[in-house]
Length: 109
Length: 112
Image (cartoon, rainbow over all chains, first blue to last red; front, side, top):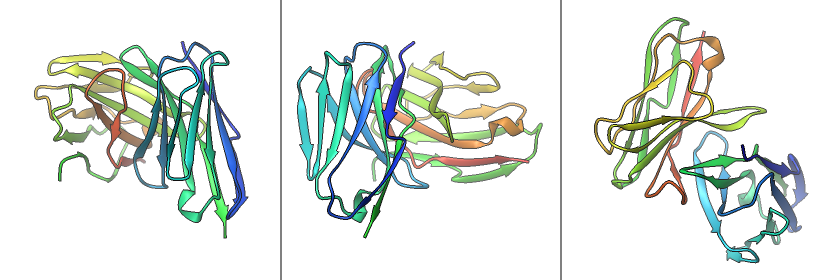
């Protein structure tokens, strides 16, 4: 079965700094999804990547899919306190998604 | 507003009791999913449904029962709750099996 490994498990960054979260799959990625979760709330869909080399941006968040490496990265530029939360990657697995364990992001102001 | 709603948001019950978590979506999405989220395990799929009257097991289905008589509703029942089922439960829906899923706000369930 497909497994997704996220790194780091958690990180603390100073407001204004850039950061990157990685998601590595044990199998070929056909569709990769990034979600954000605030404590006590549901997951909010951020972006979907489907093609190798694809890159998408939303505000200050950019995600890339490296199909050959079976990996995706999420990059946040000039982090803000509003970026704090848990970031999860999910991958297409038949008629459903499999998720990584998540990366906890804290932003110090 | 259109969306996906879960009820109750919080529930405390005792071992051996039956408890049902409700999920309702207004998008007429074909697919609906139930997950549990636990520290150290991330999100794990319990059951999913491709359409009304079609359900399939996910990764951790033991101890749970689902039904889907209407497209918009997908209740999850714990027939005899155990402490190991204490968790946060999320319902999600999507228009297709592969594709972004949209999540409810979750039900925090504590079993004493």
